[in-house]
Image 1 (cartoon, one colour):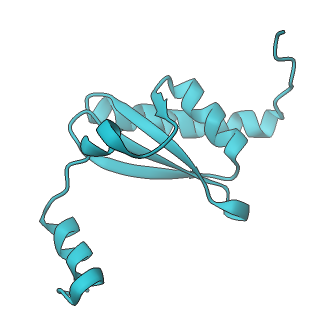
Image 2 (image 1 turned 180 degrees about the vertical axis):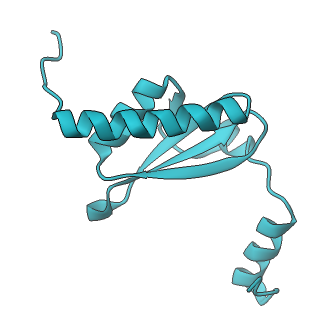
Length: 110
């Protein structure tokens, strides 16, 4: 059965703007894959991992807009951020010192 659900034009515009940002990120990093995470009333977080291992994220006001944005951007979307997908993330000294600072009293990076 075909999906006949209509998209609010404003939601479509928001998704198109996010898709453009996602596409720009993918172009800058040799491609990208993503994961959409529900944030409750805050909306959704789209975590992006570039082919070069760089990662970043964008915020969407709702899960529906986030899903539409990644669909429009044409990236692969993972159901969970684990396994082979998580292994693609490359972290540098900043991330490691920051994680250590949070966990075991390392530098604060202020």
